[in-house]
Image (cartoon, helix red, strand yellow):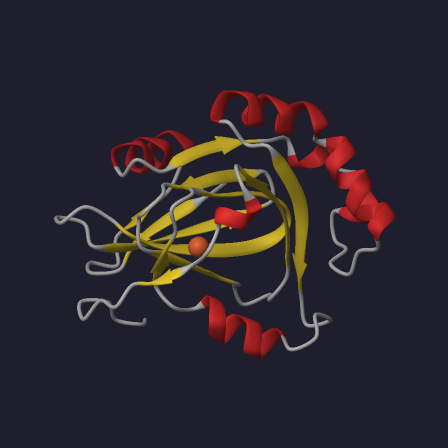
Length: 180
Ligand SMILES: [Fe+2]
């Protein structure tokens, strides 16, 4: 289940209802899929061939189509990152910059862990959303954020897009952001 850490105060928010209430207020979509639906061999595998990626998409076909229908997503794919990913450190350096885009950023975590760092309302400031398998999040369009891995450095997620071409990151220069 996702957990929140508010960076300014180090306050943590746990428990599905509390996390959901907090994210609702910040206009961040949070839902949950059944992580144990995924065949056991795929629950801990981070280097995936095309067949395995298709298997994950097939497992969650109903959930994906439901979300896509409600929110207008037209395409989806699988992203897998781990120490087996070539140039992982370089990739993470690129990821770890606050940015915005004109589409929302949807991730449904199917294995591993990851963090979204998001700029919240004025009174909250930046907060971390720590995600694990089963967590589904959408960071709204134009909301400053970035994504990174957690200490285990491995994740598999479904990404959903309205238009893949329109999904370009715009750097968001923010003097108030402090890496922590
Ligand atoms: Fe992004």
